Amino acid sequence: MKKYFRFDELGTNYRRETIAGLTTFLSMAYILFVNPAMLSLSSVPDLPDSMRMDQGAVFTATALAAALGSLIMGVIAKYPIALAPGMGLNAFFAYNVVLTMGIPWQTALSGVMVSGLIFILLSLSGIRETIINAIPAELKLAVGAGIGLFITFVGLQNANIIVDNPDLLVGLGDLTNGSTLLAIFGVIITVILMVLRVNAGIFIGMVITAIAGMVVGLVDLPTSVVGPAPSLAPTFGAAFENFGEVFTLQMLVVILTFLFVDFFDTAGTLVAVATQAGLMKDNKLPRAGRALLADSTATVTGAVLGTSTTTSYVESTAGVAAGGRSGFTSVVTAFFFLIAIFFSPLLSVVTSAVTAPALIIVGALMVASLGKIKWDQFEVAVPAFLTIIMMPLTYSIATGIAIGFIFYPITMICKGRRKEIHPIMYGLFVIFVLYFIFLAE
Image 1 (cartoon, rainbow, N blue to C red):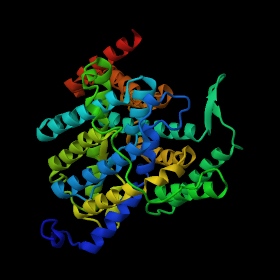
Image 2: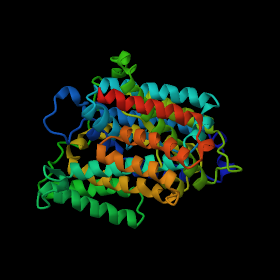
Image 3: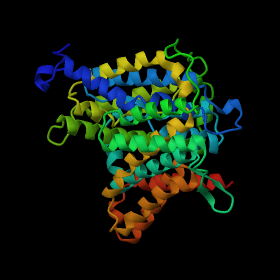
C-alpha cells in the first residue's frame, strides 16, 4: 500500500494521510445536507411532488457518488482530491432546468449522464486540450464568478433576506422573522470561522446554526442521530427513464452547460490542489488524463445513482494543508462518506435557514476569480460582465453563459482581434443564438 501510493517519495505516512482525508471530508461534508435540500427544491413552496426529488434518496446518492468518485480519484489518479456533487451545478439542475424550464428531473439526470459520457470521451482523447484553449480565460473566470453570484442569490432567497417585491422586483425581507434571523446568525458565525481559517468552517457553521435553531425552537429536534441508509429506489436508474428526451436543442444547451462548467471546474481544481501539494512537474499535471477520467466517471455514476454532476472539490486544499500528498487521502475521505450514509436522520434539522449561510459563503468564495479578469480591455470585459450579471438577473446559469459567448466574437471582431477567436467559439455562437430563437417560439 505504501509503495503503491508512493509514501516515501512524497514524504508522507498513514497518520498524516488519514488526518488529511478526515480534514477534507469535514470541509465538504456540508454537501451531504445542502445537495438534498437543493435537488428536492425544499425551499420552494407549493410545488407538485413530481418536481421534487426524494431527499433521502438524494442524500444516499450524494454520499455514494462522493465516496465512489473520491475512491476512483485516489486509486487510479493517485491525487489527494475528493469529489462530490458540485455546488453551482446542483443549483442549475434544480432552479434552472427543473424549476424554470420545467424539464422533469429524470430528464435532467439523463442530461448529466450524457455530459459525463462526453467528458469521458474527451478525457480519453487529446481533444480536451483543444477545448481548454478554445474558451478564452476571461469567460472561464466569468462563469465561475457568475455562478458564485447566482448561488449567493439563491441562499439569500432561501433565508428570506431577499424577497419578491412587486414594485422593485426584489427587496429586503423581514429581518425580524425568526428563521431569517437564524440564517443571518449562521452567516455571521460562518464568516467568523472562515476569517479565522478554521478547517471545515462551512460545515461547523451549519452545525452551530442547527444547534442554535434547536435551542430557540426554530428547528425540530431529530428523532435519532444514526439510522438505516435511505433507499435509493426513488432515484436509482431514473436517468434512463426519459433518455430519449435529451435530443432537443433546449437539452443540448443544458448538456453543454453541465459539461462546460464541470470540465473547467475540474481542470482549475486539479491545478490548484496539485500546485499546493507540490505535485506539478514542469508546470504540467502528471496523470491529468486519469484525473479527468476519474471525474467524468464519477459524473456518470452519480447520475445513475440520482444526483447532479459530481466534480472535484477545491476544499481538497484543506486536506493538502493538513499534510495530504497521495491518493490515500482521497481513499480515507471516501471511507468517511460511506459512514455518513447512516447519519441521514440529521437531515430533519437541516432547514433552509441552516443551508442558506453555506450557499452565501460558497458564492463569496467563487467570485474571487473576478480579480483575474482584464477589465481594462473593453472587448473582453463586456462579454465577461454580461456572463456574470445575467446569471442572477435571469435566474439562469445557462442564459448567462449564452449571452457572454454571443457577445465575445462580436466585440473581438470589432476590435480587430478576429485571429484570436477559436473556430469552436463561432460554433458556440451559432448554438446559443439558435437557443434564444428556440426560446422565443
